[in-house]
Image (spheres, rainbow, N blue to C red):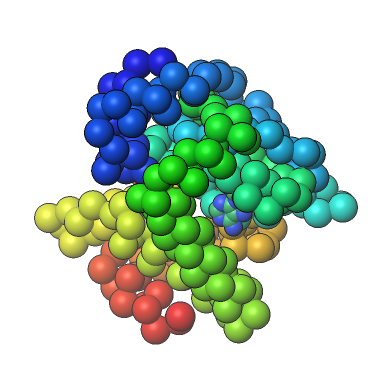
Length: 226
Ligand code: CMP
């Protein structure tokens, strides 16, 4: 594999060319189509994956077939480290939400890389800490907020992470489907559609194509609800 492909991963930002070359020699590319599963929860795991392009959702499926989205990951992110670190099956199902290209590293090579490079091990621990914080935040939302509060928090987080402030006072955010919002906040698609419809009726937000425009007053109102 070309060393240059690895340069853009912050995981490897402290490595020199020689160290990076050694890792590049171990990695194998894999491609997945949109909606294809990279792996399923409870399978045995043998590879670590770095997302080169595309995106995935990390999900759990309840026995009744209900999907809970734990996280969305994109270029530069990694997944599949947990089963390699704790020797247990995959903790979640990972599905491509767009055409996906990953670089994979086998278990023994991955563990060897961690043993030899503290900077990489530290970055993986930092990312695991970040994911644990995000999971704690989700547990708090689910345990203490009603569905309107969870939707308000969802929009606030979206506006903070990727919102574009427009001159007319609106904040534009990319709209995930109502079904995926529902699967992220633990409710039904019908409830999300009804709540978004109510917010539109109250003129707090507008939906156009794949963009939602949040009014400044909606953001203030959401802040009061969370
Ligand atoms: P692994 O358990 O090997 O396979 C599923 C992967 O999904 C897991 O490693 C992590 O990389 C990722 N994953 C599991 N739970 C979460 C979560 N709560 N947030 C983000 N990523 C997760």
